[in-house]
Length: 387
Image 1 (cartoon, rainbow, N blue to C red):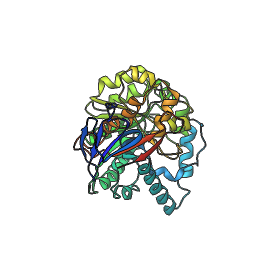
Image 2 (tube, helix red, strand yellow):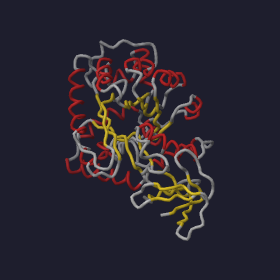
Image 3 (cartoon, rainbow, N blue to C red):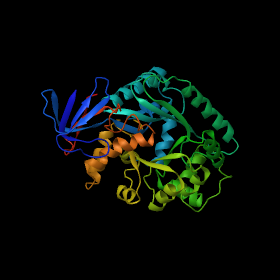
Image 4 (cartoon, rainbow, N blue to C red):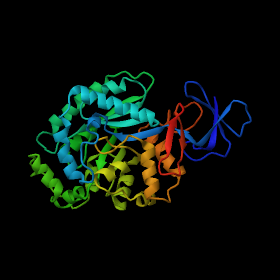
């Protein structure tokens, strides 16, 4: 099959006008041709690009769509999650996550970094239509129960690891949920679980997170107290959360910092000096849904951050669509161009999940998926999955 469009983005950049993509029936890229006169060339409007990579999603929370109020701030949002999470039958929860999975597919997503606390999403991995890296979360802000919480997460991890991969990449790692929900001892246990594991962490999603680490005061402390958690062991560092907890993680991990709504330039530079690979995952629609604000994208670019994109969950978003996330960034930061945005949604996501050998770019031998985007300069661009 020979395909071309007004513009073709290969994951890195836009290719010369008239480039033709030759692709096999199974989705393998066979060649990229210079302008080619061929009676079988199919011409599309808009943009052709590789499939999207959703670096941060919570499929197990899909049944909470439209349940939680918007713009409450992170702490009230977190307080409501446990209240609503158990008000559904197993059948409702299963139906919602399968519907969300199909939404990912229809929106041109070929790989997902999915957060899991339980094994519910094992059935989605068996569908074998998406590459998946499951980030098994540890949660526990008590030193006395750190080992117990870690062992519980490892049991979930082992269940995911036991699944055979047939055609699609299925991977997993044990990760911390967030700085305010993981004690120093639990951080250190996670660090040692697998020396080369990709670590994903919710980072600086609210100003209260940094306040707690600097002063041991504020809304995070109120949150912990509301859950009956004794934080008497914790000592304020006088530094931001990121500049504190990264010292508990070895430098050879590849790090995905998620949200970064209130990250400062010094935080970015500290992390990038410490770790061999750092990625900064933005979930703009979720940031607006929860906090009503966005990360400083210009600052992230100035600091040389490798930006990738996620959707967060349907508890904090109205859709699971990377194109919608990119469009929000374009609308709120107009000087961003689609060449950069599409790189964030394709190649950078593949790099963050260490799947770049298979997806993320239009290169010979890869099976990255192929999308057609139209209306990219309008308020509502559309994506159609070709392969």
